[in-house]
Image 1 (cartoon, rainbow, N blue to C red):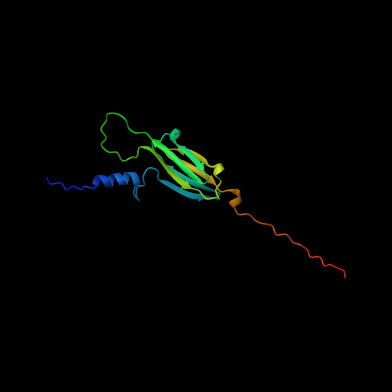
Image 2 (spheres, rainbow, N blue to C red):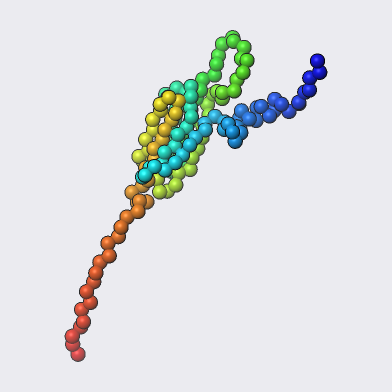
Length: 139
């Protein structure tokens, strides 16, 4: 039986695992949307212990770091497509968001962040004052 070899096959596989593809992003795929006065971001983190998730905000950069444990043991892996180890992702938050009031929850392998719009960025109505003109009487 004649087999065709591709010298770059392993390199392509490694690049897809590290960098991901448009169909399957690497490590921490996310969805983000605005719902009323808050932005919602969901990260897929199946198999991650919630205690290993770290969220840090410095200025307007939000860093999400998580760890999926490496399989240790003597078993021989047949397929290893799920990223393991420590991985992180950073989001740049706009100045119109209130980074002091970010809420985070983890359920069924999904990390959900809720970032409220800052009060100063919400639309507001400005009252217009009516000023009566007084005519000056005099010489």
